[in-house]
Length: 180
Image (cartoon, rainbow, N blue to C red; front, side, top):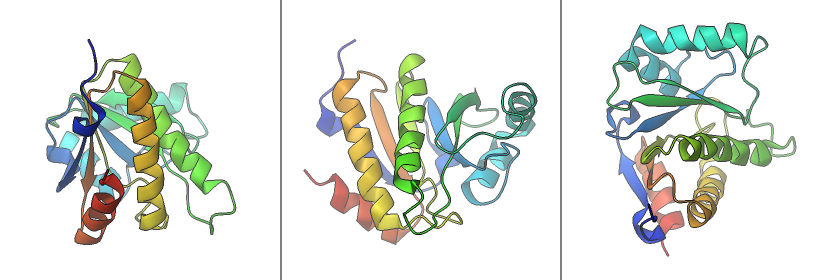
């Protein structure tokens, strides 16, 4: 199936990622994969125990030391409108000199690789690492918009990517970065 034009493949929504009607949402998970606060906690609460059950299995069988930053793995969406959750562990901000940008870019690439391999029609991303992990929102927005655009220019899947932001500040940042 040919991909639609790039200009129609990226969307921006201010709202709750757990309510997005997409094939997969991305969870800004911690490396333990066992739930946490902010987006991670909201996804686990809304999705129900099936997500945690799969995360525990993955942790025991595949990631006994935790999911490394930049990596991603798919689980069920449980009770969410999205059938799948792509779990990714973002980097903690340490001033920008400890490969945080590379790890954040790798988060998006890893998630998009899963979405492409599974031919997910649509994926929704939160602001990975921009909450308690402290990644500066302006730098993150510039990096992730660039990464997603590059991916979509080279791949037919996913058909659409939605950035789901929580606040007005993030909405303005993404609007500026998404302008042609």
